[in-house]
Every structure is written in C-alpha cells, then in structure tokens.
Length: 349
Image 1 (cartoon, rainbow, N blue to C red):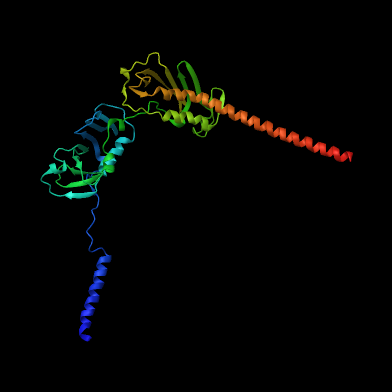
Image 2: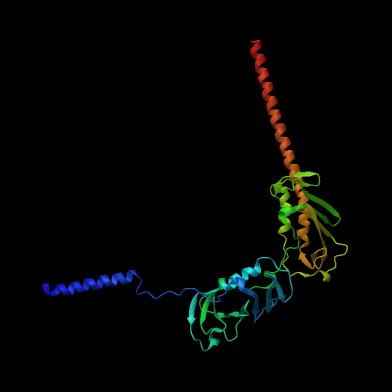
C-alpha cells in the first residue's frame, strides 16, 4: 500500500491542478474583443465624406460635410440646411466604430473580402490634415455582418450591420426637414389662413411656459393641454423630401399663410410662411428664407380643422358640465321636496 501512496498523491495533485486551471478558464480560447477602428478625438474632426461606390436608384454617391466657424455645412451634393444633431452624431459613430472580430491579418488578396473595390468608404479629416478611412466590403457568412478594414491597414475585421447603419446615411438623414421654425415656449400667437378662412391662437400668460399657460382660440378660452396641442402638431410637421431653393418655387396667391409671433426679451418677433399647392404637395416658404419644404396638403387641412375640433370639444365639455349641474340641482330640489312632505305628514299626525 505504501508503494502506491506517491502515485495516488500525484493523481490527486493532477486532478486538483486540472480543476484549478479549468475553473480559471486556462483551457478556453480567448474571445475576440471589439477593436476601435478609427481612433480620433471627435472634436478634432473638421470634415467627413460618405462615398457610396455602388449607389442604388435615388441614392447620392458622395456626401461631404465641413465644419466652418464651429458649425457643420454640407458641401456635397448641395449646401442643404442641416439639422442640429445628425452631423455630430455621425462623427461620434465613426470615432467609436468597432470591429467585432478579427478575420485575418496581413491580407494579401483583398478581393476575397470584397475590399479591393469597397462598396462604401467613410472618411474623416482632422484639424492637422490627417485622413482616416473605413472601407466596407462584402457580407460575411455570418448573417448581419460585413468585412471592413481601415485605409493603410492589411487587417480585416467583421462589423455588424447595426454598427454600419449609423454610418450609412443619405442627405435626407441630415438635412433640416421642419418647415416651421419657432421656439415652442416663446410663441405668443399663431395665425393660420387656409383657403380663405382663418383662426388665431394666442397665449394668455407670456411669463409661463407653453404647457403651463392657458390659451385663447379667438375668444374661446382653452386649457394648456388644448392650446399646446396646436403647437405639438406644428412642430411634428416634417418633409419627406429634400428641400429646394425657394427661388425655384412660385408662391404667389398662396393657399396657406401662417403668421407666427414670438416674444423674445419682451419684444415681438414676427415671421410669416406661405404655401402653394403644386404637383400634389404644398411647398412652404418662410418669407425671406432660402428654402422651400414640401408637405401633404391633407396635413395642413388637419391643422386647420383642429380649431373646429377644439371648439366642438370645449362646447361638449361645457354642455356636459351644465347638464351635470342641472341634474345635481334637480336631485337636491327633489330631496328638499321629499323632506318637506314628510315633515307635513308628521305634523298632521
């Protein structure tokens, strides 16, 4: 028995060692960690370009934005007005883009990944003139992922479609699409003239936020909820087409006129928008503004009809309140009559 003790001890030590190694994942293959592909400080990005080398019908081949005096401006395909968030959002996306998995290093034949002729190119230019480009190749065998690499590198990575979607943009994704521009809480009055008819919404208390103040529709008093419902509808208008130069749109004898007055530092700041129906859409132009935006005429009709809908709603609420009041008064009167009758009967007895 003593002869087997060293062997038994060795077996126990081996089992213990194996258990310890297994519990600490010593035998597992290291998992791929996401790798940041385009390293740059987003504040250093001065311009970016989205190049689509195989555009589908209606897609723009090249989109370029440049930062001028701290603000983004589109230079290709045209100097469209930009919304305030999309350019910075795109820069954040490219500077945080990651490769989910390393496919191959020192690749000699890029054609097997579709990277010899990239489908799309995403490039940024930094303040010091440095250019960094992310190239998109073919889809991988794994559904929803693609081959990518950076310019100047021979390493191919796998990237998810979700990651790519934040980079694959068209001009419509970045331009301003709201035809009516105003500060929600500074609006003092809104007048809508549509096909010869008109209504005016007025804020009752300029010292309050829009959702705190009561409103008036003509002479009709409205609650804050009813009043701001008009503003909500206005700010939710958005064109589904790129804007066009205002000079190319005829808006003489307009079907729509919207007059907005904002109260800024105690002063009235007016602005006027006019709209003309053409080709099944209504083109809306701010007087003196450079761009025209298209909307569905039915949207404008619904905005105008909202005034009558609100009048009907308030009238019904008043009628219901009066009916309830009359009903309560009748109940109280009936109760008093019953009590009086009972008292007289007791007196007779």
